[in-house]
Length: 266
Image (cartoon, rainbow, N blue to C red; front, side):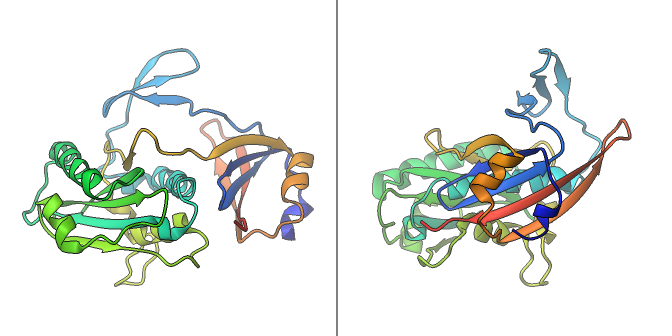
């Protein structure tokens, strides 16, 4: 199991799908549900006592809070991995606007019209879409469509006709990709032209939800384990990746976390 068996962490939080498990080892009881409930772009509900709070608007982009953006992408990876059995059941679409479309509020209506047409022709089972804003302010969408069986061929011209707003690119995947969530999130965050990892994280503005999904999207299993339970479930497995993070809280206390990624044979 590598170095993690030299330090005993009392608690572990597991986010598990059929394809992968993300394990967070820590010295405190991991939280269950999120401590806040998103209400709208201005307000959130604090679960502990029911108080209403306001989001900090001091940052210009979510890139100024990269930790939160990375957390969102971590959740997105597991959400993607929970929604397919084989990569061949997935199609990845990029939808752009011919114009310099900078109005975020317009996206919802454009998306509803698009997915309504797509469902009539190709009948995807579930979807996730991610909004990204370029430096000049123009929006475009990255769409992940999940099918219950082999994904159909989707011609670029036909999809573009359904979109009706600009350029479209459709991508499929071979079955040998063993972690589609990581693969797609790397594509969404890395600047391939500049060979810089995570360079596109700053393209996600503040107070805009990073991704949206259909109501029937499958959620990963999330649960907590003690150290012995962690060893029983993962002790014989070799993680694909592992790293440590030390976090200093507002009260000055320090917490150490170990993050482990396991890939499962399906």
